[in-house]
Amino acid sequence: MSAKRPKILVIEPAGGLWGSERALLDLIDSAPQLEFAVCCPAGTPLVQELERRGVRVLPFLIERLHQKPRWYRAIAALAIVLACIIARPRTIHLNQSGVYRLCLPAARLLGLQMVCHVRIFEDAAYLAACRPRPSELKAIIAISRAIEDELARFEALSAIPVARIYDAYVSDEGEATLPGKRDPKIVCVGRIVPIKGQDVLVRAMQQKDIMRADAECLIAGDGLPEYVSELQAIGGDRVRWLGFLSRPSALLAQCTILACPSHREPLGRVIFEAWSAGAIPVVYAGSGGAAEVVSASGGGVVYTEQTPRGLAEGLTTALNLPRHEAARMIANGRAWLDQNCAPRPYGEAVAEVLCGP
Image 1: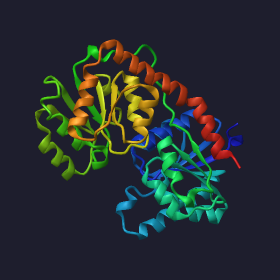
Image 2 (image 1 turned 180 degrees about the vertical axis):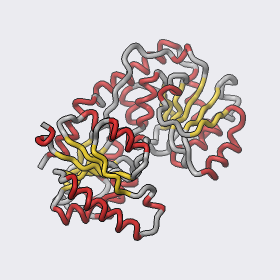
Image 3 (image 1 turned 135 degrees about the vertical axis):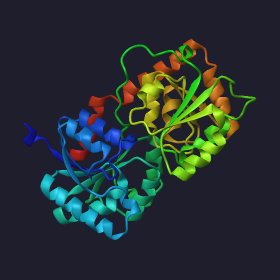
Image 4 (image 1 turned 120 degrees about the vertical axis):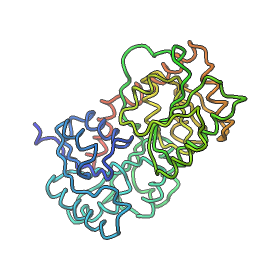
């Protein structure tokens, strides 16, 4: 049976367990009709998860390639050619579109087509600069309407079909846990980088005339040590820094609010995890995908001014919600997930793109 399934070679350049890699694992779980092999760096957290699922791993890529000298990219391109020769795929699937140029020699040499998942806004401009041909890049998968709109800005991509497919996600079973039963804790989960807006959050916690005196903020994630230290210096005693957490669901289940203060967010998988854990997301209206899913679902609080005071007001609104209103928002979020992110329809939709003409 396995030999009859279409073979897909996934190129995953990072191999961590951030949102894009967890989305890849969900794809593999959701599409048993496909046979996957994954080319990624050796010794990364993703490898163990793939091996646990019985997925073939081709650990040929170099971790943190963007930080290496340019000649390393030639080695990586050859590694992808070798992976294609070994895996003999029907399609090359780029889990992150930033490896398009690295995959192009393999596609041209072996006559293979590619499908790109576009997961960050910057990759739209990157792909447009590559001026892809439909004979080589047969489709793009956009993970949100915000990403789809960004792709539409570039004439060089107009000939490439775009499919908007939200990432798969499975909500926990049972009734939504009521945030009112928890301590007033605010959690922020993600890479600690300027685009994620943790600087706005730590300053929001200092708005003492707005923020509840009993509110505490927990920040989970890592980033450049200098930047993290800079934020820690201004965070004060109302902010705790937890470092990287590979599975944030347990932490979310202890908190009332998920703060998602990103300036731009293509989708925001952590919002899905918050709904599943019973936490209310608070997102910036101009963020793109995060505001898109929260507004469409009615599953959280959207604040309009990307300033510490604007965020503090949004957090305070969420913290002061009546229990029935908080439960309604979480139920709305879970219903949106069931409608848009159910695994089986997701797997079928992605398989159609990967295996289509």
